[in-house]
Amino acid sequence: MIQNSPTGTPFSFIGKRITCLMTFFKSISFSSALFILLAFTCAQAQTIRTYSNEFLSLGVGARGLGMGNAQAASVADVTAGFWNPAGLTQINGTQVAAMHAEWFAGIAKYDYAGAAFPISDKKRFLAINAIRFGVDDIPNTLFLIEPDGNINYDNITTFSAADYALLLSYAQKIKKVSIGGSVKGINRRVGSFATAWGFGLDLGIQYAPNNRFTLGAMLKDATTTVNTWGFNFTPEEKQQLEWTDNVIPVNSVELTGQRLILGGAYRQPFGQSKISLLTELNLDITFDGKRNTLIKSDPISIDPHAGIELEYNNLIFLRTGINNIQEFRNDTNGASFTSIQPNVGLGIKIKEVRIDYAFTGLNRVNDGIYSHIISLMIDFGKHTKAPTETTN
Image (cartoon, rainbow, N blue to C red; front, side, top):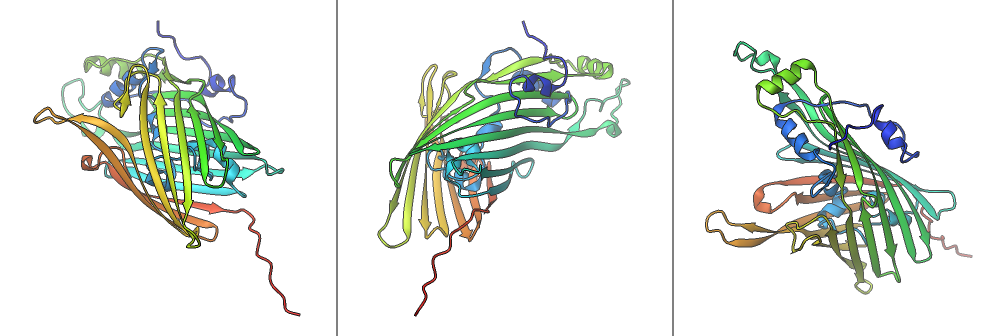
């Protein structure tokens, strides 16, 4: 039996499970026939969904996106709060970052902002990262046709469908091992008609036996992320939905299962040329049934992805990577083929400012779902100046 969402404000439900999140959203509900079907699909029974909270799989920062999302082992900046919180131990001081991306010819907008800083003893670190993925100005045609059958375009209004996430991260270094975790609060809303509130926990670890080789592991949604959906309709909206043969969704719970990400990175310097090459391989392991990945079985599927970064003097960075390795079937002859998504990127660092660019997508290149992404990172760490030689 489907249970209703807990009474009271959405945050009161989350707050019972974690006290370090602050109140940051308001409760709302749902409309528009197009998005009713979407919300109803995402929020029926209390079972783990194969694809849930997928906006949190897109990634943040043009560096990681240009490397095919292979970041579990090598990430060492503020974006580690998303990729692997253990990587926060590599920052030297306060860092801030921001990113903007647009998908589907600018219809969907994806924004990210984050900040990280060490605690006073410089052995523990905190970070906060915020994400929004949304489509704005969606026409609501629920009352387009009036009871007498006439079409009245003045009845069309607009709304936004957006997903929000707030990640609070902590990391600590113990000799050659770094550990970290991220508590995440999730709010998904469709106009003033539907809302979902969620809570989850990510755990990460990195091990660096030397300056060249690093191992990393990240367990996303370690406690199984819970999203509680709530819907609220006026009597007029319910009547209109019934007249148009739409199903009225009910309050429900959606669960997001665990995802284990294993990674290894190796940095190869080239003599005294100030050039080095970083190579990383990640394996995303899911446990919710057969997926369209390179290695698939029931219930475990494995999705490999890899990236490389060529660095010159910590000044210029060239990147590339592959991910989304999937099998497709040709509609014409029925033949199967394997598709790989390529990505490329470029980074420039000028003193404490790093600007990164990535040309990346959501699937194959020939699907046309690619975007130009730019991110900015500023490092406020204290840099020690080299001693000045004096002549007697």
